[in-house]
Image (tube, rainbow, N blue to C red; front, side, top):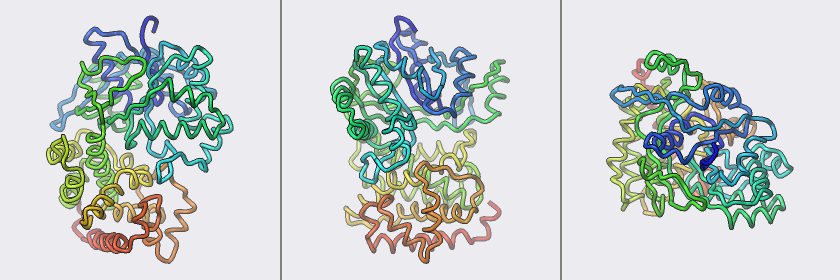
Length: 462
């Protein structure tokens, strides 16, 4: 990657390779080869994929599919360097320290930021404590090592860029990272980060399921290529970034990225209309025995609860907006209904303990502030309660993954005399509404209504 600016990405999962890597590839197709991606991972779980990508010289096929079933295949060439994993993340540190690395981006789940309900760094978390002691379990521990070496090698400025669903992601990451460095006693590095880095907020969007063996089979049939790192996604794609880069950036506006002053309207619409609805559909579908998002979305009752939530509560909360929110709602539900994506309720329903406070509670709060009872939104925590009740009874059809899950505490909660009251009284989930009697009564009614719905005999035939 000589004479080239490097975009180093931490997080070798499918989303990066279907999203940011696709945009950088489009620039290369236009003849702009001034930027290339160096891809690595903090944890060992992606090591086999990184090894496979290295064998393929960083190239892989991206399959996209429209709601009508039209499939397209493209060989992505923007990964110019694969950074092998080791327990000291030595390749990430070496690449991240170089002045040619002008952007360090990362994709992290909501739980992976280790934030409190007030969105400050939770210094009581075991992984955070371990990294304060010099370990590398979190993004903060990894970046502190990478940037310490960068300063030692001259300290060229660098943009630290979130590519994930955390609301106000750049700001909240930056505040948490500086809190981590302060707690670590590394005031010199904290001062350097304040002066020599930027962390713009971003909004990213492209539904990207976990690849199945069928993806590689279709890729081989369509292209003749055996690809051990093939990935698939929907055809829709969007990226909105606040244009605040300290060390230059690719000409992303030439390939459809929206560079804006404030990402807030796009971010709020996406998190509340797309992300919250996605999770609700996954929980509802699971409760009636469905496996996939598309079939769950097409179930009339689930479609209606999702449509009502957005129409009755979200759109009034976000209006006025530069976006056509009703059109956005309809596009989102059409995307979720795409039968060719085969996105699982298991994937989308994960990390609910972070999704409720980040994606749902703000709409509940906004409705009450407007003097409106959020009946449609209250269905979502009611669904999640019934979903987690199944988890506590070991009655889910799949393992539930949640980075914020404290199993022993939750089992005690669901074994208590009034598990719903205990659930709704959790300030980590519902902030000040946790002590609101009207909210407790509203969700209790919605739980009872859903329980009646789940008893309907025709559901067994769905």
